[in-house]
Amino acid sequence: MLVLENIPLAPLTTIKIGGPAKYFVDARTTSEVQEAIAFARSRDLPLFVLGGGSNLVVADAGWPGLVLKISIQGIDQQSGHDENGKILFDAGSGESWDKFVSHTVIARCAGVECLSGIPGSVGGTPVQNVGAYGQEVAETIASVQVFDVRDNQVRELCPEACEFSYRASIFNTTERGRFVVLRVTYALTPGGSPRITYADLKRHFEGRETPPDLAETREAVRHIRALKGMLITSGDPDSKSAGSFFKNPVLSAEQHEDLKQRAATRGLTVPSYPALETRKKVSAAWLVERSGFAKGFGFGRVGISTRHALAIVNRGGAAAADVLALKQEIQHRVEEIWGVHLEPEPVMVGF
Image (cartoon, rainbow, N blue to C red):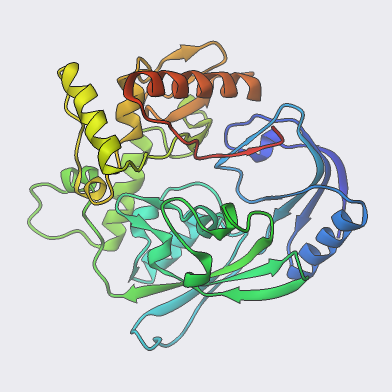
């Protein structure tokens, strides 16, 4: 295990912001993960586990302890079916998520095709129960192999133990900091059809005589993400972001009614989509745009993507403090006008 000192973290994030890590380890095996955690414990250092850096804002001061980057590789495909007729795919947490999705689509197995183009690593997907375009990983995760920092054991957690909910799991709520994700196993449907439920995807395939296959669906999702500046593309200023910055709020029936009444007084209707109806979930992008923050809104060195109202982008030389200021201004205005508090989606480190 190689321990490095004063390593800049900004280049390891998609928003390209943040100070250095006092200590840094790039772990490629489970034993290196164990060694790194022992190193941090022996020096009483705070530990932060880094994956693909795509859903992350690091403070300008950086991280005062050890940053442990997980680079465990490998994708293994089970030869037979499980008892439910699914095929199991086991992936190291350091694998590129989009590479993994591509692998499953080439294998003609359905379940994660709508999650194409999402930046970051496999290990980050169970932490936030990553979802997009009508799918979320909780639907297909069969197990998560973790290192339990509390008792220095490698454990296998079933989906129920992970307590998945909207953009959440035990890994980022009740047991935050206890587990380091090592590998994730997904149960996918061989020969399954793609899920075309999301409005953007339906529009993309409108008028087609034949239903799209998994590969066409993957390409469509990547195309739609690119149009919104949500595909990491070299040289594209809109992709220098931490992805969607705010979660879609889930409201109580009373909160939802209050929002509808506030909208009606302005001659507006709160948009309704099948995916949002069941849990009184509302569009964070709609709230942001109707609070005075249009796509392309400028705030000096930071701004809002010209193609996606939820993406705060680094326009060049931005500091974490700039991102924080814009985040707080958006939250304040949305709450003032609509009575809804927006929760940030990225992990905020070192603040």
